[in-house]
Image 1 (cartoon, rainbow, N blue to C red):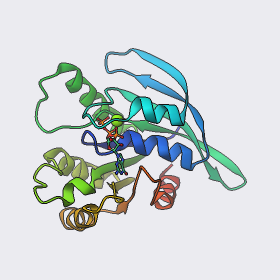
Image 2: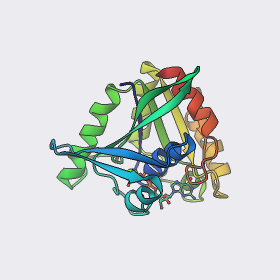
Image 3: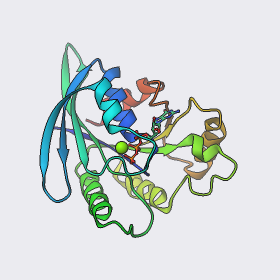
Image 4: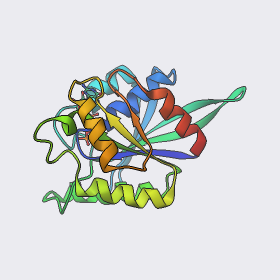
Length: 202
Ligand SMILES: Nc1nc2c(ncn2[C@@H]2O[C@H](COP(=O)(O)OP(=O)(O)OP(=O)(O)O)[C@@H](O)[C@H]2O)c(=O)[nH]1
Ligand SMILES: [Mg+2]
């Protein structure tokens, strides 16, 4: 099955996006497949509303393994199934926690196997006055790698927050030449553009 992966630093809203995108595509429930870096795998049927409570949160590294949702895009008269893969947050340098290091390596390996890459940045954090850490070295590296590969879209998330307007302008400067879609994962805004992108690349 074709895969779309969502990557980015911790707490930018990847899991929120994955689950809200499922709702946007009309799925109130989904089986979520979990795959740990060490090889342990399990699956759980979820109501998306319950998954939002269980799987998103303000503390960084809430997600520590791959979490895949099998979704369907409308295609002609039928639908095209695809896998939306939510990942563990990427950080700069070498993280002290080995399980987070393994999860990062797992994320980067999964990126190579995906047909479409969504790279999410917290535009609201980037718009704040002391936005020193809102874009990491890892973001520049990912953008460079993905540019060569194609099938890559930057998502400027949290556009519902006031600081995000400035953040989006900064992001456009920093990543000039890359396609950028402003979204609010929380309010499912900007999703039409993301859907069109995913459809083009699956
Ligand atoms: N205002 C606002 N908050 C958001 C939005 N998207 C996510 N959040 C909040 O940001 C926090 C992090 O969201 P997650 O979806 O858990 O972030 P993540 O990128 O999966 O984080 P890790 O799993 O730690 O890598 C939560 O408190 C969310 O409620 C958004 O579009 N707008
Ligand atoms: Mg997460």
